[in-house]
Image (cartoon, rainbow, N blue to C red; front, side, top):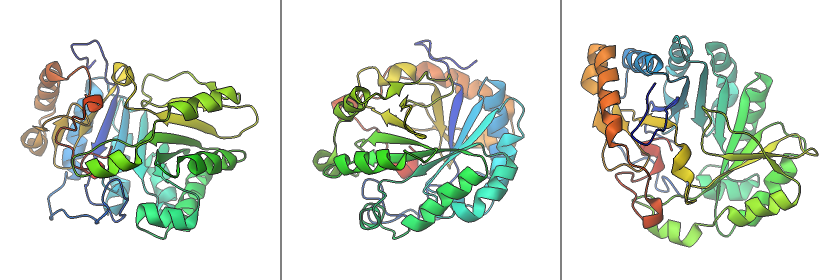
Length: 321
């Protein structure tokens, strides 16, 4: 079992398969993708990586980007992860612009959960925040994933001055919509410090208000992400909050990250990536296991976001959040 020097165990791998994205979200890639053509992890390298992590006790793989559905082999990537012995859950984070047409083959390949980035249910506001007038396509993706029996979670970044309307609209939507909406506090990244200062809003008062309205916290699974999730007897859906600036946020860390270029990141805001590409290209599962196990000794106790330290992370598309 992968374990760091603070006793935290790692059941959960976030695997980026591309850093390319065709949306232009204001808090991530407001000017669009500016990267150069690169050789992202191949299917064989992904297979080596996932086998190594499975043998070290990882049970959940989340496929991220950029936007993972932009890879032509996305269904094969999901199938490779799902068929790996020891992996019990394959999830994916997506903007869902292409999900309506991909939901069936992805479900057949073994995708169990999809997290959909959706910051507003109001068309004009959605277009403003995402840089794309594709709200209907995204909502079609939500419906298609539900039809296929996937566990659907919606990620909405809380932003000033829209936070109150975001909470109001999504809460009303959850009356009859069987999804979990997680409100995420905006995180500071290297390229967006000014945007952070003008748009960050704390989730704490919103969480307190919902509890006062009868929303009850739910138990957290060992392979779950960092969200505090709540349920209400009068609502079909659930609400979650991801609050990276809370004092105890890193205590329950259970995930590691691999970039689309094969670098291990011990934290979303680490100072550097640790290069695994040579071992992945050679198919050496044991070398990957040895490297990752030894690297965990350097994992820090906190991401230090509270101190304004953002590490190497210029934008969230680099590592998939």
